Amino acid sequence: MKKFFLIPLFAAFFSFSTGGFAQTVDTSSPDGMIKTATDQVMDAVRSDKSIQAGDIGHITKLVNEKILPYTDFRRTTQLAMGRNWRTATPEQQTQIVEQFKMLLIRTYSGALAQVKDQQIQYKPFRANPDDTDVVVRSVVMNNGQPIELDYRLYKTPQGWRVYDINVLGAWLIQAYQQQFNEQIQQKGVDGLIQFLTQRNQQLAAGKAS
Image 1 (cartoon, rainbow, N blue to C red):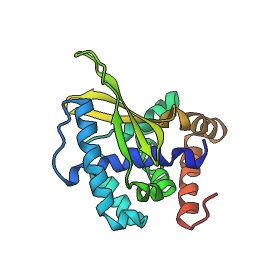
Image 2: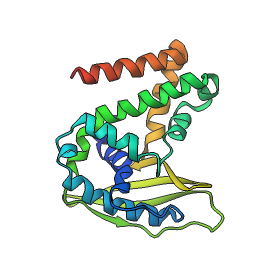
Image 3: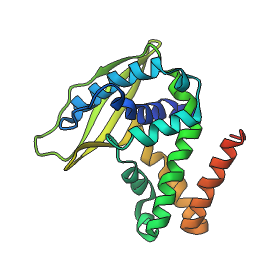
């Protein structure tokens, strides 16, 4: 998947975690949680000059502190790895989660600066009361152009958690499944860790391709 295609996806997935800045978000309702947090995100990003400037340290700190309350990135990584997740040791799993998260942060940190005057329109939320896995659908109007943006959430004892994002028909997890699988088939789980680590080192050194 091309980088520009994932830019709005990254901004949505990671900037969503800033919702804790203003007030606690009610996680008992999936669509209500998305709407409240997104409103707070738009305000927070617009007023944070460090994020707008792409400050990687500030963005990393923000993600580490604020992503956990509303998302389950470990679940995201597990699903991206598929059956290969079970072959990884707990230590390897932790390494992959952290390296994958950092890869997305470093690759798409500039996307947060693009949050300006976008308007968000939410589609009618349809789910049964006993559903434990749902999708909240929305459309982001960016300079008059509609961008499909959907959130997939699952229910936990602590409330709803986001674990996947869809932009223009492309889901984050699906976008990385093939790449992860190819790396593991060629070089094993350690090979995937090495690949993610090297990509992060390249991006940190300004050698992004």
